[in-house]
Image: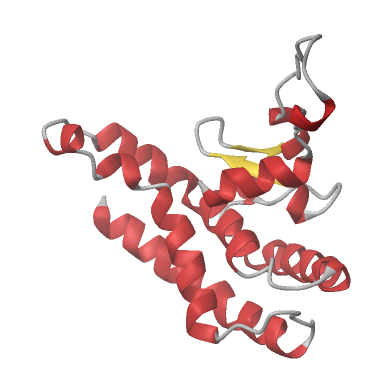
Length: 172
């Protein structure tokens, strides 16, 4: 199973990373400049977070073959999510529009499994990949209902927005 994951990741990186880094460098503006190896490293770190459950002490004593197989199945969706938040966030709004179009076009031609392609509606930034459900979910759908106590002060209110939910999810 490890070999399958390694081979799939190698194929995905070969198919997308160089093209997307070139695109970020030459076709869009970065308000805060980055370097190529840090962009690649960011993508890898985000992918790595999906493997955290395999590093726990409990995982060392448990047969995790079903979980590993499930991760292997959805790895392409995880990879696309990681490309978006590792490469596509270093730009401004115009760059995001261009990155959105370019990534979606690349996926249409290079996808290994069309089930994990990002939905055509909205932008790549509007969706979260849920590996358990094996689908892309709009960020807006994971915002919990806000119940405010009646005696709360105005300055104590924090209203979750799609941006704050995205940032919190990616950072934590």
